[in-house]
Image (cartoon, rainbow, N blue to C red):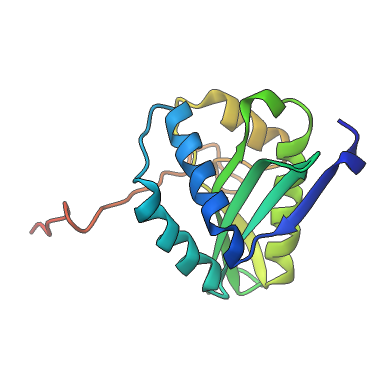
Length: 165
């Protein structure tokens, strides 16, 4: 793929359905079912309306071939003042290994920096070695500077969370 064949654009509210459908395709591919379109669509509309969030679309020959979804939050521990979280980066299977993911990632980092982020976090399943290799190849690591200890990510969904102690 020639880089000139690829167009990257910031998604707008009009792109919410396209993003929702891509998210469903992403979940289907990895056998992790996503909520149905009628649930995802208002979520993407709300997301795109938030100034602390953005999505990128990768378009080639008139077809959307990939996307990236990024949310920013204030942070006290870096000079940029914000941390970006790459929530999703997806390239359609038939278009992988053509540099599209690398271009999406670079543009997501650039846009995050323009919006005041001093770093980016990416959550990757430990068993997803392809994704881990991809991000490591592009300068991301899973340990803090000066340490070989892996950084861990914890989460709790409120409908399941129960305080202890």
